[in-house]
View 1 (cartoon, rainbow, N blue to C red):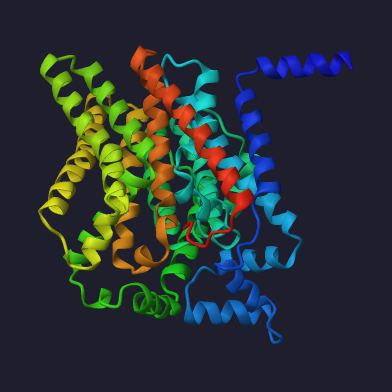
View 2 (tube, helix red, strand yellow; view 1 turned 90 degrees about the vertical axis):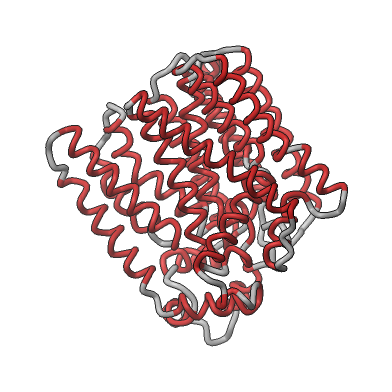
Length: 463
């Protein structure tokens, strides 16, 4: 008994204790709150499984020819759907915990004054900084988790050795089989395969340049990613699925010009950033502004950044409250206005201000990269560019209008990575501490609301 108390005391003193607490809370949430939502895709896949003529091979073949190339994800979905539900709950918990663990490892590699325990605490709470109505469907819905949370976790796993080496850390090459398995799962979804392949190539080339030698050990991962990406993007059923989604959600989508599709995707990104991930959006611009002011401590810049952050905060909080009060549904009003061809002067002004904030984030991150020229700020810039690129690539698919906010899950995780890296580089000023505390309070309240929602309700419109 005494030895157990000593071990627990040592664990409490460990900087990794916040991740342990997070893991325990997340495990309890996954076990007792998550379940099948039969009014959603969970019910559709359950019906397919229970069909008298169902065979796994026949199901996967038909899906590849008539729906998409998500063969790996759909294989796992059907295997876990046939197994006791607790198997998925435990596996899903493992995937979500691995995302938090990657954040912890990433933040601890960054240079800065923030203590190790604070970095791990920030990383552990990061996932709950995503508004729960946006987080639930990709992370906690059974069927959607195989196409969003799981590929995202696998992508981080397969990229982790490259990231660690670029930051000057050490890796254990005995995990190569795990990295290869993760590569297959990481490339099993459209957004994920493009992101994984792009990131892997950039990081691999950067590592070869840094070390001035070719790392043959990573070629198996690259080969698997390329093969899975080709399988995914050449699936004959992709066009069939796209036409079906357009017919249901946006019948005029096929007639839209390329520019108008991009505009629609950008408006969806604005809606998501200022309505569903307000906290991440506020933290990102605030941290970027603080980092820029550290490099260029000019009074005029401080005033300019204050105005920019003020406009940004207005869009994230008062504007949404105002729109909700006038029964327009917050920032989501923009989507309705776009699809209904009802963009007026108020919509154009909102789009202009929102665009200014997003461009400011991209511009400041580029300036910081040029000024600092280190791995941390290169990572911040890459994460931001990849986040926005991931969001914009969905512009060419009607999925953005039919699948809801789950399609931005990759964007959310990448923005969280950028926020965390920025946070680690900042001094512990009063402003940083206030923002950090506000983020922790938001995460706690967000989690509480989600527990209540999953405990009491079953709402099919969460995602």
